[in-house]
Length: 118
Image (cartoon, rainbow, N blue to C red; front, side, top):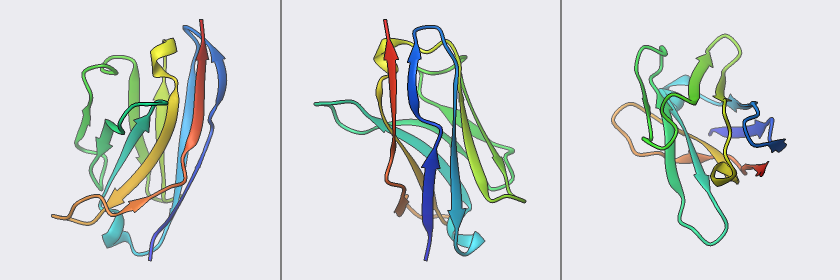
């Protein structure tokens, strides 16, 4: 029912900025909450940030607090991840995910590569 398409990944220098976007299609009840996750080579997927349906509530992993900002534009059905002060350890494949109210994350994008050079 839901298709998520990510964009905005790329290669940046340490200290640089990047903004990821996730365009969602499907019933709005299936995308009540959106989130970003990432997976570095050889590591498990980890939580990065989440945002509620109206953008009123957000949460972040401790490792990205103060540097990353999640937002959404429901008119465009798009979620963003503004990434500032990027570090080499931020290098990973970033995935967009969606869930309905009271449900677990069920829908996932294909991921977009973010590489931060030293």
